[in-house]
Image (cartoon, rainbow, N blue to C red; front, side, top):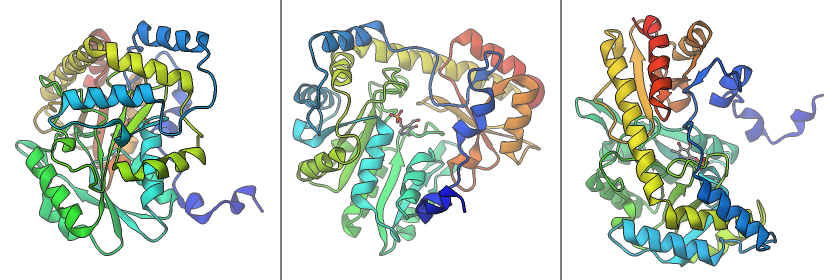
Length: 387
Ligand SMILES: Cc1ncc(COP(=O)(O)O)c(C=O)c1O
């Protein structure tokens, strides 16, 4: 008998394969151009690390507040109140050990075995993975791909909810589509969740990477503090801090103590000195965030120019936000196999659509957050595979 047989059935049943697994044999191989993960090649600016080192030197190295240090919660509250139309108080903010950790806390709060969550897809797979670990079913409602891009039909969403639905999850801007859900559609989703007593988990991890905008439309502009709404955010993308593992959630004030308890029994708090780095990132990071947005927009242009030149590539209008191009190649319905073939033939790492929900099996995702010359080289290498 194997030791793994002793693990919970829900855990044994979750597939082990994911994007990181697909990439693992070539991880760190410098001949590969890695467009498979959701991260760029730009490190976080030096002032953030300097703030962290100063915090260590100042002795911020002990256990800390479960919802996050007051300074970071207040800094985030000021930041969010300035970005959106409505004020957000620090009592609505909990600092987390990444966006993923925020999703874990949210779903642990909400879901039990036998429940279901409804994820708007194409969608980043980790939310569904976490729900599955809790024994919840993951239902998908697919956005429609039309001439104006991906759009969400709230009626289709309403039809998919039932008595065991505990949460609706959507990301705007989306990963992998870059689609931004207009505020009136977000309002319809919020209304539906209110009517059905269902939680809404809105992932705004890419909200600062909306091209030409200070921020993508945010549901915080139309929600009440005590709505069953959790907004997920992260330092990973806009501040280029993927490896630092720092994020936050905006939640009803009344669940703050419960989130503190969940934090106590999981991470027992986010690395204290890292939170001081977060304060510096928010207070001084606006020029850097602007440069990340421009970098992604330029990368999107280079990748989409090349993709649009290939007669076999099918892609809707260019994404106006985010870090990804999401496309199909005629004659390659199995994108997982296509990714493996492309990797061995060209050394370009892409992510297959199979991970982004049913209906995306023939899609490929390329991260565009790379230096222009690297992206041009990647697209040159890809050209024969797409011709
Ligand atoms: C939509 C979305 N949400 C959340 C995350 C989590 O980010 P992190 O855990 O690095 O903060 C990602 C990462 O790719 C993402 O794409």
